[in-house]
Image (tube, rainbow, N blue to C red; front, top):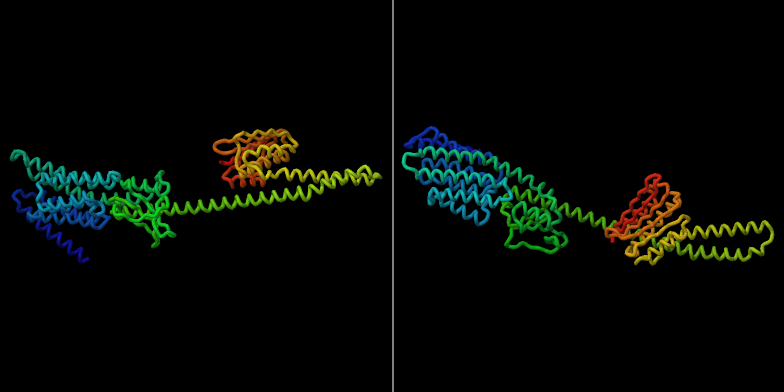
Length: 514
């Protein structure tokens, strides 16, 4: 409160001294005196009312007392131009950014010392406007205020210089002064509005960066961020906890270098990422905060995606191992049925057939026939079970022979067409064999089909097997058999499609990429 009271008292004294000096001037005017005081107070009010970085607000506010001091101190007559030019050069952060800014600040110092003519000061403000447009060429929200304010001051100073070279008496100098004061008043009033617009734009920067469709990975984020900040050499690096270092998108270590600044980004005291840049906009704290928020969210998003992909790969690998284990178990069971069950059954069947002629009596003959029939039925069931198990040497196009053997025992006619280029590895052909086997079994047992067609071809970079029947349709894709086939195909990044309109037959299509 004491500082505020002191400031108010100082401004009151300056305003009183300015009013006194204006009233004693040869061409005293109430309008000019009022505008004189209004300009000084407007700059102080603008600096106090605006948000944003404190250094910038202090510079704008300082233009007010500098202007009032110039009203009664000839040595301070150009001091406000020094302060105003520096404030516009440093907008919106209040910090000097780059060689061009340092040069303009130096020229502003010369103007403040009255070492530049009026036309030179006008050229200085024109240069400030040009530099602002170049620096913020990709950020019009930040560019419009310093560029428009500096251009307006340059224009009014140029006009004032021009009218002073007109013949004496053809132009009132008080009118030129009034125009200059009016421009300064507008510059002061526009300052809080400009700061508010920049702060709103910075607050939306994170959403704008993350919604850009080009954003994909660290390199994509760097491109989007570089375009937004006007720095095509900008790079984003991610912190890797295990290596204890920042890594680029290719996993290579990177360290800070002298040719670029580093904006380090953390989360809960732990490093997350770093932005290597030459963007002067990141000297502005609100901009740096918005960029940090966007990068933090983006890197966290990338990390979660990578963890999700890792879990998905682990899940797919586990599912493939389960499928392979089930196949091996099925192959062992089929081998056991052939060797340990079917062979003894066939042996017993042959022996009973051999003793059939020697059996006497109707009761014994009938019992023997029953036993022989049961042995034959058991052999057929075992053959059906074994037929659903693919050969162990599938792959390299041997799927054709396996399908021919499968359909040989089918009670309905089956046409098999396998393209010459439809060859895959053992896992691919095994999965397609099971898909064809399940679809054929459904057509025979549930669809009452009279014809079935199996086609295998290479299509769209993968192998596609389609089983079509003329049955009753209405197959349920979520049934245990088809769902099991879908899971088997998914283990190899494949997919299953079932088209089965009621009364129009069924087509089961299995596709595996590769």
